[in-house]
Length: 374
Image (tube, rainbow, N blue to C red):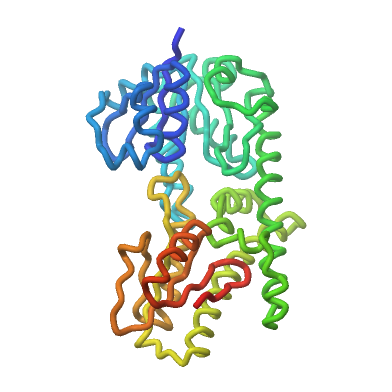
């Protein structure tokens, strides 16, 4: 018997999940938060439009259902919203969206949180869920923690760590995936996020001391070349959530804060390197244009990359008036100004490298060494 599945949040991750579930033969709808409706995703749609960008570009006419009706019929509800607030406003936005998502769920349904949290974040969600619905988690309603991230996810948090066969058959899980308690899942996710950030932070901090040209050349390995600003801040939302779940100083808070400062320090280093390029090439700020080439996913769940792009633009404008973000060569136009293109991801660098023979500009890789390509 097919399960009725609803995904709250028309995000890239949410749509990807909807397609996999639809191809698995289940009834699935995805809620567009900007409209009061849930869109039905059938297997033929999942095959025709394998990613959300393709669906958005073509805009096919799809069956729609009012949100409250869709949620009230759902047996399984995934919470995968798009978060774009920053600072203290994030928690307010999250709580508001979570209330909207679960307010019409029925008795016996399952709620799956797909956003990474810090320690105790799911306990807050469960309290809110029970307050809004009046149901008891583990008795009249189920709650699971399945944080979607860029690394292979092999854990699912559940009440008392119990395995849920229905959820297992529904999700495209790795072979070694196991169910653990929600608290254990939070700890394991924290370890995964911290390990990756600490590895990157070590590289960024050491590269700050690489001033000599020969040292930079020797350090120019594939490992460093593959790391770009785009990679450095992946899952920054999760790291911040982890940091916000502590009060007071501890060794763990030092590690988290060190990673956060490492990212901020890199933004400063990148700006300093751009200013050095101007100085070495005797370029006047008023006669220079900075183009930040960063092909961002507008529909991803977490908005950390969009936030950092805006921050970079704002800080660069303190020194250079003409700064803008672009996504393709069509946005690159030559005028009387010298153009400096900052490639913020490997794919963006590969892309701009192919077209640079046709136009004259300076390319800066947003990698740990901030390499300059003329």
